[in-house]
Amino acid sequence: MTANTLLPAFVIAVLVVLSWYDLRLRIIPNRIVLPAWALVLAVQLFLRPGDWVEWIAASAAAAGLFLLPALVYPAGLGMGDVKLAGLIGATLGYRVFTALLLGTLLAGVFAGLLLVRDGSAARKKTFAYGPFLAAGTVVLLLV
Image 1 (cartoon, rainbow, N blue to C red):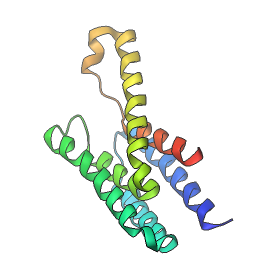
Image 2: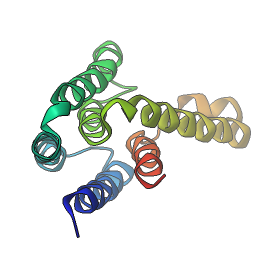
Image 3: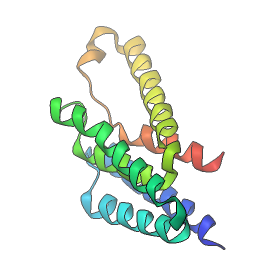
């Protein structure tokens, strides 16, 4: 196995664990997401040093994109989602925005299904967002 195979496998494993935590406990634990983010970024910089701007910029931009909504409305988007976006940026580079869009679209479909099932009562329900972001990432890693 090469690093180009191991890194996506590692990220998928981390995303599965983080999704489990988010679904069960509604948290994305720092003790998992932060070391994974640092490790993935370091490996990307080691494997592709000529593309260092892409890895750092995508990681920072993805986290930054999620930071503002998390600060404005913390009940809607948590800081764990911000850190998860940074990890995804470190993993995918500039393709991060496609993964985040795909994850957001999947979450929107799920929210729509909740509205159909529960009517207006669904507007007061919350759900874990991390698994949808993870799903968008996995799709891009595998395609």
